[in-house]
Length: 70
Image (cartoon, rainbow, N blue to C red; front, side, top):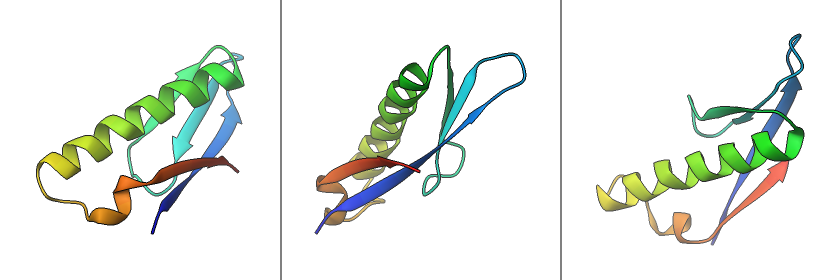
């Protein structure tokens, strides 16, 4: 079993990109480019999942994670 996190991207009026992991409320990050924003939000999502695993707040399905840009 695995979990696929969807990443939504949007360009702000100031030119920065914001990426958000839809399945993890509050997990969003800015970047100067799409790739930068995606890399930052993936790193943040992995930290959130690691914390949940450490605190036994997540199940085994989180041991196999992938990301898909929406």
